[in-house]
Length: 120
Image (cartoon, rainbow, N blue to C red):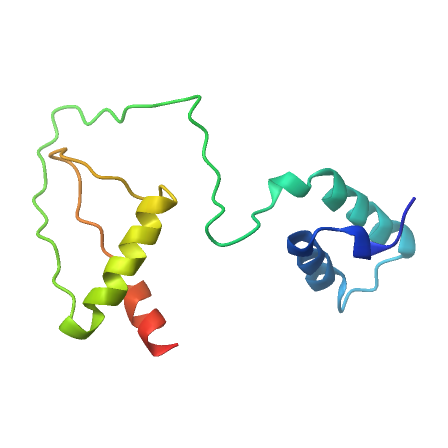
């Protein structure tokens, strides 16, 4: 069994290093972890935008006779508008959110994320 973790892809090597550091794994366990990560490399996200998507199955949400709830969009502070638009564009590109005309759709709200990105 190959025990050299350097042949793992970068996004999996970081996961291996964080898991292995500070743990007293036997070499056999560390080797098994490496093999598991090597075998299932495609299972782990390569970036924060790599969320995965499966179009094989669509589902409907049965709302029964429920009434719609009207939620007005929240206006961000003027200093955060550009940042919020950028975040919403990223969310649309990664298909976290999508455009909708449904009576049950709520406005996208990225207020918490916006302020974190502005500060950091």
